[in-house]
Length: 157
Image (tube, rainbow, N blue to C red; front, side, top):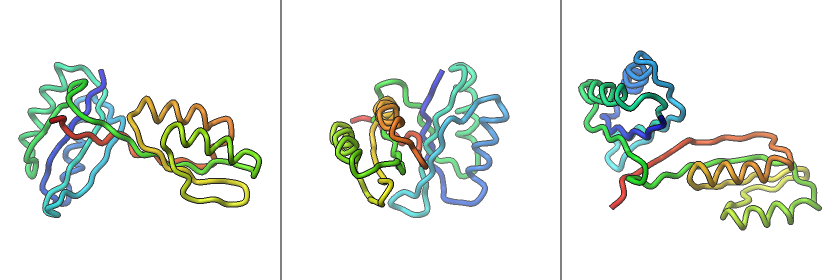
């Protein structure tokens, strides 16, 4: 089962390693992982997409919550959070293909952020399904390079 976990931590060295070690030591695969500072630069938010059994995950979350420098742990169930990913692509694009790529970008609200003679760089945000659908349409043009963030999530309401 897939879970999105948000962990508020003190911005100290070693915190990420302890958290990742806790999950991997219990047999969970960390599918995606994002870490970024909060408004207060003494704090960071770790957002992880974890794949594993729900019962075992509850136990692991309790143990993560006990780790030094961990302030809060939230497991988002389906529908409890707004989720977004960012993907940046370098796609092969001749002058004749650019208009087709621009139409695909418009449909998905993606932006062309750089143009070179044989390629374009595109940025796109959306939920995981939207990103996957976009990638499936763009792939036939030839993806030269890709960077994808994985999930970021905030609680609704």
